[in-house]
Length: 432
Ligand code: AMP
Image (cartoon, rainbow, N blue to C red; front, side, top):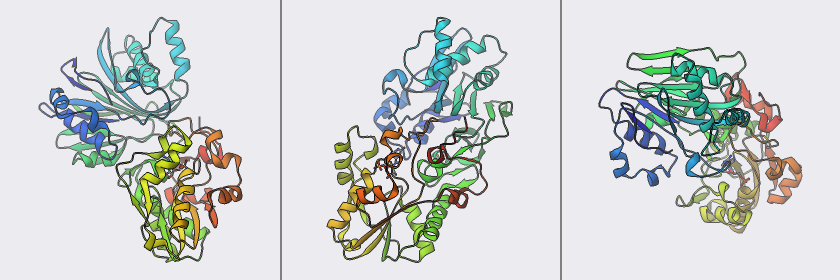
């Protein structure tokens, strides 16, 4: 969504830029979203981008496995209301959005889609009728939101960013020339050749206008709960989040795994891409050489989001193939960041055995997934989590491994130091 003066031009797909006059916001949003996320390229053809004029812009990419995948739920969500126009992009999940929606519906609001973002945008527009500024309206609404969120709100003159008080979802501030950028991940800032300035603090609201940046701390609370799964899997390797390098955290995770669960082996390898960095860490600590053992077909998308089990299983085979010379007659340590249903790891062990691996020892750089996530991290419900109904030994037998060990929950400290984290998907202790 790009705003020029007060006219909304286009709507679709959190990355935002506030540029001075003449800055091409559309291309910056495009590159900020595309790097590492894909598919944006299929929507925003050059001709489409060309038409998006303006110097302030926000964009969003949605990884749609939960909630309806329809145009009404595509973001940013834009709204014309009595005081003007606003657009909103939201990353995360608000657990009381439905209650807020019911309240608004009772007052006569009609919703086009089923997204939290629409509810938040309507709530802000409504609140704006009684407040002096859009940021005040946004803060008042955010006080009522429960869950994890990074919000970008755009008005004709302003770009506003709000990060949830617990810091469940990441949000950071960058700069390119005289333009300011707000993005979920620092890697999106570097993708547009910008510089990371700092993280937006949990509960902080920033307002970017032609007069610069203003920060508000009304939502700040003493309790924090940064999502550990960002460091384990979700965030990009080249991102820095809350002052921690995602890459360093994963290396340290692999080292902690090697320290706690050593094994005699010839080769350490990882599941591409998500298990590779922890595998390097495991190798570093154990002294066992790290050798990539899989070839990845980059033209096959995420196997995780295929709808049926047989499609997921065959997608693993299409996506990854084993390099026989690396594994034949070898004792292998195979690292992945997580096991959800067990499909990926079972398929890979099977391939390794067929290629002549002598032993396959699995080490997972996170504890067993036991509980669903309600804050937008897409950890499915218990029925799909193999560990919630099977012991580690049962899973080992089922996936065909010689041994299986998960990261010890206390070893998160090795990864993220004294950062206060949310690890509810592993221990069931939900922060909200
Ligand atoms: P599964 O094959 O069901 O056991 O899923 C585990 C694989 O999916 C691992 O390789 C993970 O890197 C990846 N994964 C774990 N959680 C997610 C998620 N929420 N979204 C997408 N992929 C995931």
